Image 1 (cartoon, rainbow, N blue to C red):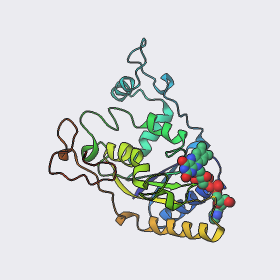
Image 2: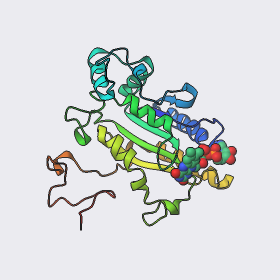
Image 3: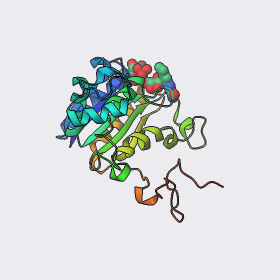
Image 4: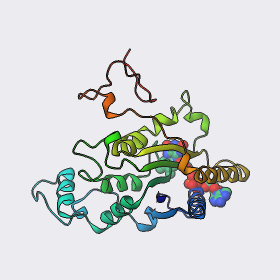
Length: 246
Ligand code: FAD
């Protein structure tokens, strides 16, 4: 398996840094091919600007998705974006490794998605969800948190993990056609003791050792919806984020 780890932590000595080293060692040790995009080390730009393109679709009005479509047709992406697209093209498995920031990914990782998952390449033209551009590839969240596991329970203070991760797992990964592997979460990485951290690292290595057979999350296929985008009657919502209006 060719694995791309997109890593977003500014401190190599952090628990995220330890998880990155464990991942590279475990995956490479099992014979997988590992590539890392260390976004802070790369000083990866997060903002969507005209500098993202060497081509111009409209010099008078900057519309990002229109420039993306134009750049796909004319090979017009800036070198830092093109390099990440090539890594993603070559990967079978994409892992986002990050500390949760405000119920989401750190801005530098969100910027990586904003800039690399270009319209006309990563999605568009009717290619979404099970018919998405990256079908056949898998993706996974590996995340550390400040909050303990209890607050990410369905009745917890932060809301269920599947809801917290919905924008990433459904809105980014599944939207673009990835199969989504169950997330790995190191809860309260900064607050627990060394023994608990060692156990979490061992569990992380264990998850990676079985990555090829890891369970995939269930999502609805395009066929489950009407053209309007609503679930057809008779199709029971099967995700934590979708339900019938009462
Ligand atoms: P660190 O604090 O860097 O590391 C924890 C400990 O692990 C350190 O003591 C380190 O020495 C130790 N360590 C390093 N290597 C090893 C090793 N090999 N073995 C054992 N121990 C090791 N949290 C939430 O729950 N929800 C939020 O919405 C949220 N929003 C945030 C927003 C911002 C802007 C910020 C800055 C933080 C937010 N947090 C939130 C908290 C954040 O997610 C946690 O602080 C983070 O996930 C902890 O991971 P870390 O890698 O930074 O840990």
